[in-house]
Length: 180
Image 1 (cartoon, rainbow, N blue to C red):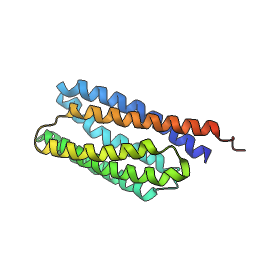
Image 2: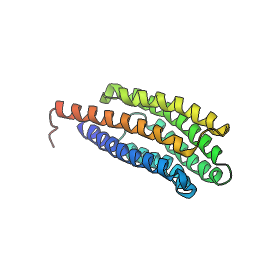
Image 3: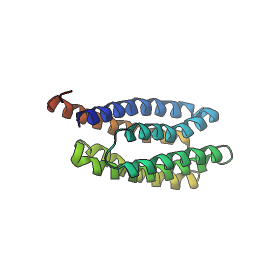
Image 4: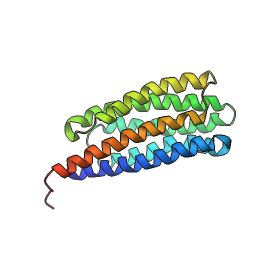
């Protein structure tokens, strides 16, 4: 259990860092459509990579994590296809992904809550991602949102990942060390 907790903690710290960097780049890159397009495709692919890493040691929520991988790949393709001709549709695709991924994250957080603890921030993050996804989808379809508007979403996600990583770190310090 300690190994799983440590693995998740490290993953969540990495996600925090990458999401902050992504948010800065997407906000700054809003003036360069090519960079912004690449960043929009990379975000769900980063989530896929993290989920695949998570799957290596996950015992809870495996089917949910697998669904998240498929969703992220399909989203990256959708964003890549729509971004050149209809950038607002790319935002809407990102929104649909955020909504669905938020629901999946909420489910995984609930599944992990009893086993690992320290998941309340992931549960809140899933709920917020779901709500943001609705807003991004509607904003993208109406042409009212732009890629730079997604930066705040990544920052909030990073904060939730950081909180969860710190909670897991605290749990690791409270547990006796496993014998090898």
